[in-house]
Length: 150
Image (cartoon, rainbow, N blue to C red):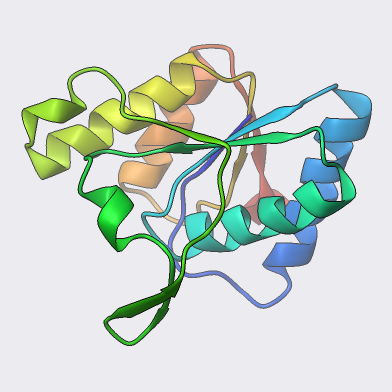
């Protein structure tokens, strides 16, 4: 299951992400979450999945990065300082991301997520890259759970 799309998030969104993730775990037998850390929504969703892993210890968290340098800067911050790293069971650097072109690497990362998941929990209230990501996922048969529609 992938988590992507969106930018800043409203206060109740973490509860909605949690509800949808639990539904996927309990009713769709989802046991692996592909997560990222490229924006407010992804970070919030990542934090929710980390909390859920305490209740559902069999779920796996796979961090999908767009560059190896991402591993050096990811985590909970206090200003510029990383004070705590978020946990994950494994990480993936998708093919082509090693090319190093930042904007393209994010596209390759997103394509990897689309091609390797059945579900995406999305928060995408406007047009743009997030919208295109969700549109592409739907076109590939991925079920996009769009939280802005509820």
